[in-house]
Length: 381
Ligand code: ADP
Image (tube, rainbow, N blue to C red; front, side, top):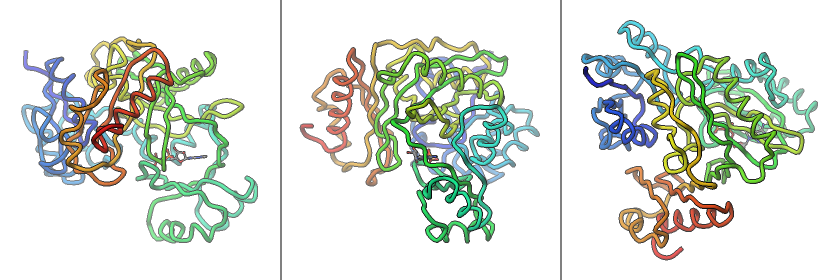
């Protein structure tokens, strides 16, 4: 029997981190990378250089021996790719019917309302008047978002008047991204519930995590979310499993949630391995990367039980190249597991992460942050 081939669109760290479990499972990972310098380019078993918008690149990705399935590590997948997959007889997972809810926040909010799942107040914004009316009804301050194309807080802006949004409103009126506005949720913290679903319907959820953001970028993830009530944890897992099933998601789904004094509110969906799940590499019987591969190939899903009472993941954001090259070896904590993505360093860019397992949330958190600081800056934490 020839080994299964999984084609992945996108050559960042998420595709790179799919490689070790692919190797372990005897799967060939064929990755469409933006350049031969991309994070996944030196890790994947096979690479095709090109962009998802280039039909020729997609043809090379789908060429014989044909992949068993096509998946991705980001949501910016043009509809043409789905047509090309269909023509080639290669399933695309998750399919466009599911993925569009992760691509487009307006479609996502509308669908969550239909399903009766917890949304903030929101509306589509077609004009300055729409925005002013929403602000008037919602305390004068709200969160304006582009429906598509946002990541790491880009495409999100807190506004108190339509004047502050003039550039986005003008761009939107001239064929730019559609806009939506949401009530500003008074959240106490951000959580994420991760789940995997395979085409035959099996669903498995990981423990609910707390995700700590700085300047709109995830900086640390604590699993399980400290002091989360059993009821809320179960609710978050139910919401994630219900979304995966109702939307027909195949692969891994992360549901980002706000926790408030009154309960939980959905922030957004990611239909791929996600930063909130990096802890699973060392912290769970089955990592999100392995599970994603199993799910898209419709193989039995792995156990999602945690391997330690607490796991903390800390991102390495930016830093200086020289320190990144060598200092992980100097990390003062022998239990810290360092992951470097092989990416060029720019201030604030996610260039790696560190995971530490332990028994106490605060201590484990301090160890993970200290280790990530050493990787970023070099020397002692
Ligand atoms: P991105 O697509 O860039 O990840 P998100 O929709 O996750 O954008 O928003 C980025 C951050 O902005 C969130 O992590 C949260 O801190 C804040 N945010 C987003 N929506 C709201 C909201 N409705 N109320 C309050 N804060 C919000």
